[in-house]
Image (cartoon, rainbow, N blue to C red):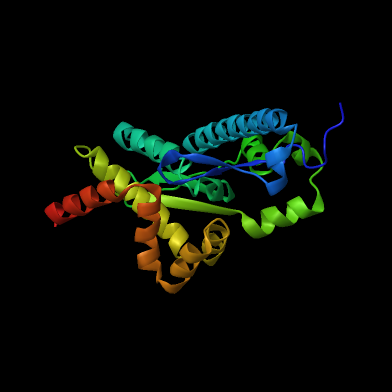
Length: 232
């Protein structure tokens, strides 16, 4: 059976509070194919969601494998942090930013960390092995212009406060993005016009807090500030 040219063009839009809305055209109201179109659209959305989830898990695994963290408490906090930010409204932006985390050993005057980017990681960054075998010109340009490796060093942790550890991770990751023009450009592309205007007008410190709030880590950030106040 031949379908109309617009078949499958319905869009599922995410609303606040975890709700969703199906966005349709005026002509959809009297369309005889509306039910099949809805099923097809939902199938495509489910496949896309599953693909993004697999990509997220693969990305997180690679980040953990290529980072250097020897404290179990800090390592588990990094894993929780990554799982949450990739599920946030800005999660898609983070696929253009590779965070690697390195913990400085206590009482160490200096340290070095070899960063060996694996073939699997390159596959993830380029979207798949097929694209790695023969990357298109526009893909190569995108990698050069839009992708950034961001290394975060930790000089201390809080063994008795996982919340403070997560707050510290969120703060450093947000600070790395908030002070970088490329990262801000990427973030602006996925914001509404009003949010984008607001972000443009504030400085890097305010942008850092805005990102922490957008990711949902304000409570952990407050826990970090309390720990820092006690340690002074």
